[in-house]
Image 1 (spheres, rainbow, N blue to C red):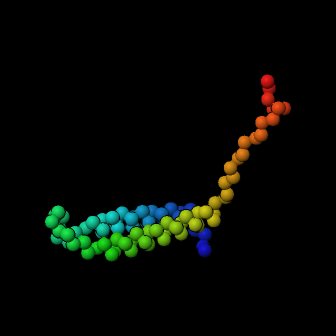
Image 2 (cartoon, rainbow, N blue to C red):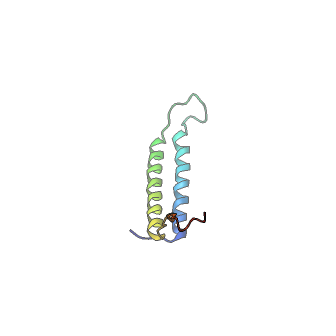
Image 3 (cartoon, one colour):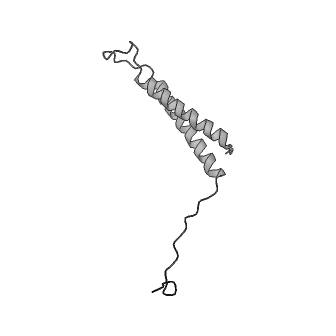
Length: 87
């Protein structure tokens, strides 16, 4: 897997968001204008492919970011012993 720089990851994520927005429009776009009576939605196939490609782009950007970023360690609390108490 190729590790992409930060600008490439941002561009990939923005492209995926644009594809999701376009797919939402294509999924609900009727053929007979914007009337409530039209029931044909011929662009739903394109919408599904846009969502699939957008999901692949998001996964690629996420994997690239995880490979490039440093691991985050969770600090564990110190044990409280009788020596540490000031009572």
